[in-house]
Image 1: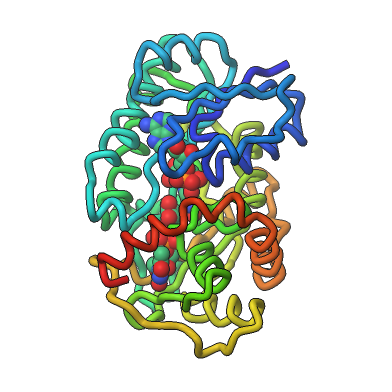
Image 2: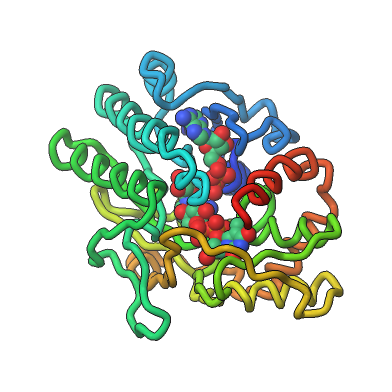
Length: 332
Ligand code: NAD
Ligand code: TDX
């Protein structure tokens, strides 16, 4: 039985990945998570205690990490500070968790010769113009815009260097924007759904025309598992599901699903340095590893997500007011 250590397993994508791993393998799983504002015990509640244990701790704590890595066969690394707007307010935790934390894990997997998978983002490639026909591939040059994306880019480069210099057995995946259950209310789609459920209007940055390439988090999980099982050591795989939509299109879909007029939103102050468009070419992982996305109907996926937030107000309600207070102070 494989023993897997999942960092950030009490966050959005990590917790969905833990559920996927439990259903697809016989692995026992240890979640290592600092339980920052973005992670919570409630997110991992209900997981089989015979197969899952949760350790509260920091991935930058070298002695804690060393002891945990020693006792596991695989490390899947999701833990990070992840919100661009927060990184513009205060970059320090992003440098700590994303760069120092990844470095700390790399030193432990190097010492114990443990297989490592690093979860990253398409934002490391910067952005594309709206009318640019190209999409990001594994060969696109790194060009990150924000403190968040630059710290993720730095972490990817550390992983590559540890593979080449020290023979660490690592792979990297760079995924597009995820949606689905357990996503924090600070992020775009949950913010708009929970705004409407709280009697507020959705808030679009700038002109609302920025484009994101959406993928259901369950498809991201299956892609990560495919890379762990069949990926080539030292290689990078881009993950996406051809889900390009403008932000305003997404808001209109959500308003329709929530029985609101499609014009019932506000345009608010734009994000500084706001990336215009992301678009992923995922042909490599599809052709080389045989992975395909299953949730290709974005509107159906959003309808399920709306239902999930309606049914789980007890999960998201406690964090909502403080997030909106921060946005309010920023005019967003
Ligand atoms: P999230 O913010 O929902 O969860 C992050 C988790 O990491 C939280 O549980 C938090 O408590 C934990 N964490 C943060 N700092 C830590 C530290 N120092 N030590 C231990 N735990 C710590 O984020 P998410 O959206 O689930 O993203 C997970 C990963 O996927 C990140 O690496 C992110 O860069 C990557 N990613 C996210 C997206 C997306 O659309 N959300 C897309 C591509 C890649
Ligand atoms: O209220 C909002 N209104 C709005 O128009 C919010 C919160 C966001 N936006 C816009 C900004 C972006 O164009 O929506 C888009 C999506 O915003 P976020 O959810 O903040 O995501 P993004 O900045 O694209 O980054 C996300 O995808 C890549 C994740 O947060 C990252 O962790 C991941 O790496």
